[in-house]
Image (cartoon, rainbow, N blue to C red; front, side, top):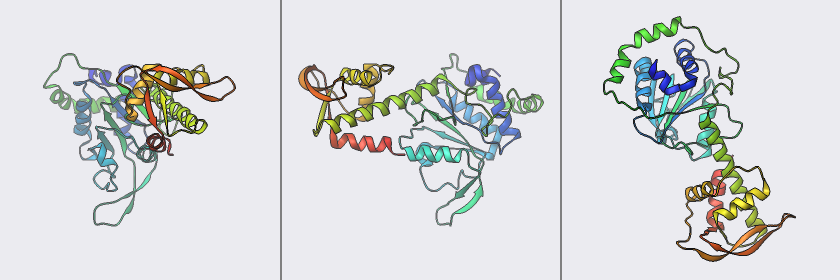
Length: 309
């Protein structure tokens, strides 16, 4: 119970419902559970190994890059699929995951064999060290239950053995325990029940990234140049002029530019930046600072990759 509290925090009763549903209602559709943390020694791996000990051959775990493969015969018929080292930067992989989390049919494919349709009821658990950008989630997305797992202060090397020893008693407890929640949606839980700060952070990050993409795209359309020179503060001011409720800092903008692969000038230099006038016109202005050179051809490769549906 202490371990459940560690993994699910103030949502511990919902966490117990989640495991009870896996045990008693295996065909019930459930949210995609995501365990994330930049820290080490958090218990993410122990949780996965513990569930594997509970569900045995009804569970498997694969690497993130394996999920993108067309061959799925090793996991398509499982109850639980844990995906480790997740970093889904392609929209189509996220869409596939979302589709599989709600469908009841899928095609199983093995090397050298024809595809066959099967009943599909797998639930997904994602583990990642990338808290901020391991997957692309839309603002209205309700299929993800994201838990940030804190570090375990005192490590017990025999902890997993102790957990496994208690499995029969734990399953008996689940049988006797009443559900804390009632089914309100096709994924059992209501969106507000599984809402976490980590989900909001991820959604907001994606929203901010999209707004930056749209802003720079508009700059290229209005200013017919092969490259733009912009400092993080320039982008901050432009975003705030377009939406004065925009909650983003120059440092967050810097991190997004870095994630896109752009690097700033080594030193403060004079450059020709971009300014948005009150009537919506973009004009070039002389400025000084550590700017980023955003080449049009490179930017649109990023734009197409991140904005595709």
